[in-house]
Image (cartoon, rainbow, N blue to C red; front, top):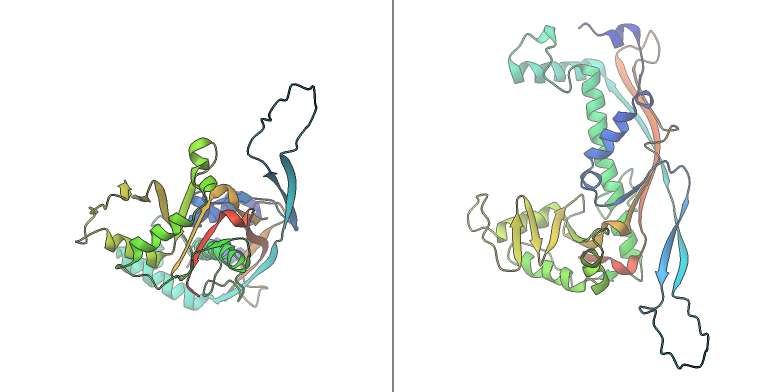
Length: 325
């Protein structure tokens, strides 16, 4: 196999290709959909300031007595958001990977195995490895954002689900059940009913703010599709409260979005309230890959990297969590 990288043992440094990190982030469904605020270049714990409004009106009764009775409606608060250090240490025997990749290419297009034909991306073994790494990292990012039981990265789940579950202020739908196609419509309605009025309508009164969405796990979305359709076709039978626009489904005007949540979980929140912190776009982040560590170790592909990431919620009392105990 002719391979310049193997012959010269050139390392693949994604630091020198900043678009690699950008593409990786965009592969995470939550970030690609712009469902959370991304704070990039975060290399340490960060205080995020938040504005709190104490009163809803600015007007007072004027007694016509020249009195000056000022009020203070706005106060600033802050929330400390932490980032966790992650590392990537991966190795793969080249012979196994080469054999599997060559067989995959050969079976897919029927070309000569030794010619290494280009079939788009990935085009070669090393780009295939980096393509795999990019997809794997994007999946980890999705899990880091949402967390929840069974959604761990490196044995840890500390995402939005976990923070809302541990919070005394978040809104939790009581008596959550195991969802199937017979009850999914009613349970989504319960999540909608729990959304605070100010969150429900903030997108209507201020178009610049992101409207609330109901985020659901894949299993719930599948049950929803089944419940809205009597036959497995692209056409949905719409109950009055549910509508479909293109490939999007809405309940009472609120979009229902499938993201990387653990099974049987729903969250109602606005994008402005959800935060993902990372240094993946900073100059300090490195992920290097190379074939062999020296001239005598040319049969193993090594990947070494590190980055920082975490997710958080600004106003926990404006988020609804549906999760069976």
